[in-house]
Amino acid sequence: MKPLRMLPLIYYLATKGAMQHPIVLTTVELGKELKVSQQTASRLLRQLEGLGFIKREAFKRGQYVILTDKGLELLSQVYVGLQKVFGEVPEVLTLEGEVFTGLGEGAFYVTREGYRSQFIKKLGFEPFPGTLNLRIKNINGINTRRLLEHYQGIEIQGFSNGLRTYGPVKCFKAKINGKLDGALLLIKRSHYGFDVAEIISAYNLRKELNLRDGDLVHVGVRVKTVEA
Image (cartoon, rainbow, N blue to C red; front, top):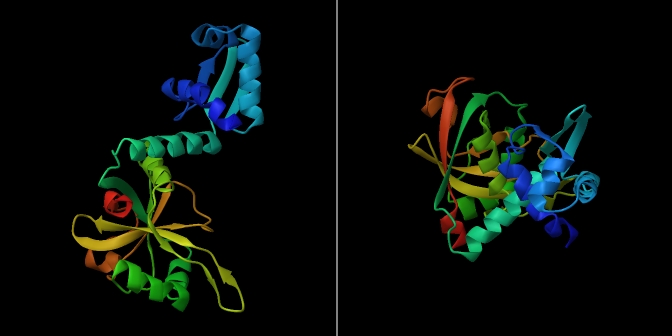
């Protein structure tokens, strides 16, 4: 429960812009906003930092404060939870990202039989052997990608082939550039961060959409059909 007790302060910092960049903050200012003493405000910030929700850097007139990935994750979790409580889960979330060449792992993973058979059964298509990798450049898109972690999605179970274990994958059906069907993958063991979206489709998306590295791609991710 302790992280949830810190939520009002995390929310306050987010409203001041600490989701996007470091903000300048003094304990005097924070104490006035929270109607607590300067000492209490200082203690609360230390607790947030100790829990890993913020990073701080002191300077002469105050301190720079920014929310960490852990802090943003808590906000995202609560935000999606409230959407579900009030029946306001969106039907579609949109992302835009620039095409880039990955490490070639996508072709290896999507062709593993333990994954491939589940993709066919649960997504309704056999994926082209490879993923379309998109680099998300704007903060709103990165936050949207982060939110997807907290929606139900279509679960692709992990498996073992006797030599190694493959982790679970969460999928969302998607429309790429408003033309071709596919799915966005959330890979539990991916080495990519929230600034990357990995897309699969029955089609060779690069060829069908005439895409090159650096091209901007629009993805409409279906959320509500899964949550309903």
